[in-house]
Image 1: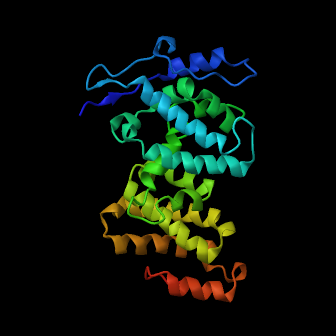
Image 2: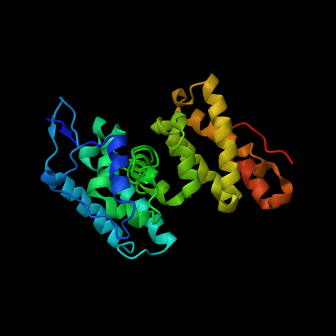
Image 3: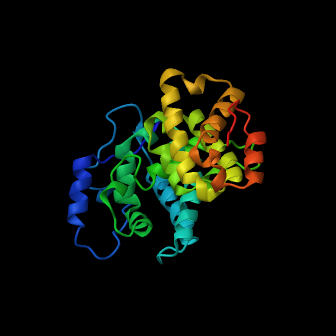
Length: 275
């Protein structure tokens, strides 16, 4: 099987493009014609063949269709844009061309954002911050691919993509923007599943603080014990404990008696939630 190599743009090239567009009031136009790619465009020197243009066109068409269903080209609501993120994450995670090492490269996503999909970036983030075009965990589409990749429950699941829609933006950022978590798909998914369980007990409004505390505990614990090496039940119990120990979970004044009883009965991590 021949590896399909995506075009790449380094940080200097991205900065040059953004500088040239700085005064443009209209959304930037996408480019899917190789003859019109920026002169700074590069491919890997070896290891495969340049990706076919029809693949780039197909990726763009799929994402544009999703965006159109969420209000594009009109601005739409915050809920529309959240729905776009959810659906685009699942779409990108299922693209065979993005299942290899090319999808791990920041400069590949920089090219896609700056050249193939710049109008969608400008629609999704109206202020057009540079970080949404540069490669990295805040790139408009790289972040969505990461979410879909690590939170996919698999094709056998009846609720394969539930985590993408269930978690808040804050929770997703907590997972994907921390390399010690986001680079470990099993740990990321365990934390996301723990968030979902905890939200049903503590309430979604309490989850921002609970998640931040749980992440701190998880990262500290992971320094002395590799959590992803635990078996499934041990990992679930450990994650449950991180949420059960949060100040939100143990504060009797912020929760009803029923909620306290639920947390004691549902958390199986061996950590008692005291009052």
